Length: 398
Ligand SMILES: *Cc1c(COP(=O)(O)O)cnc(C)c1O
Image (tube, rainbow, N blue to C red):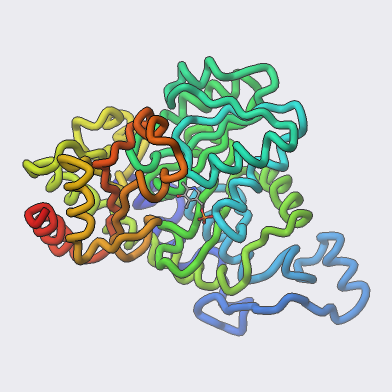
């Protein structure tokens, strides 16, 4: 693993931050792990203390939509893992997407969106922003040339996602950051599928990073949550908008997230290793037509992925010989359960054509490279050999 992943050199390593960042036992009666402050309201001992807290001259808590100690601890741990100055936690990844965009847009502005975005994000761009007078321009593809061609004078935000789902394309973030700077726009990156151990969009010039923590960061499939991370100045605007709009993370979700984050580097290392092993196995299998995984040398973005990422993640897609074969393979799996989502401890599989990209027209799916024979695997943290054996058996049975 690289210096980023191991945290060699400057500061503490990712494993240390994952366990300790955001929590000081001395401030919590010696509790070794962050306690759950499941309280909506915090009372003040007297009026001058309340006034000092409100003025910001004294650290304290008043009401959990504004600030909560457990949520704050989770935010500090997320910021430490991402190498960001600050993080704002949200009720879901989609609340984080909205929370990263809305504070910076007014009627008449434009967003330039990359074509390969999460389905919920596509929906937000199609259904919500236009009603607020914000136009969305879709770049023809994820290249800097196509994004540059889509920029206009009213462009305020370039919205990118990398790696993409389900074809695991990698977007050149340094190139987009240069374009954004030149256009006086912000680069906002949904980094959910990479997650901070594999990539650092802020270090490549992104202004804000979005995570659905429902995926790798919490990792245990028991929390829906999101986060927006970046500089103190930008996240202050995000926080202010959130306090007004109300889409906060609940204390219990934050407590579960803190627990999930403690093992995030261990889990992610396993997702990376098993993802690569599964991709290599599939690439060598005669029944598999094509494998989409940036860790494979013949992936179109392999060189970029090696430059920009420290690991290639647990999302692997492949094309079976036909749509019928894809169905049979999926139905023959024992370990890979049929289900949406990714980044959890358990391995899952899906056919993007009937799940994540179901709402699109067939022609639109095909134009995006999503064929009816495509199978998406979310590689979990089970024993790698067992996952490969499940694939081998299902491919044989089909
Ligand atoms: C899952 C996901 C989201 C949405 O997150 P939720 O927590 O489900 O709201 C946004 N972006 C990406 C890339 C995702 O995978």
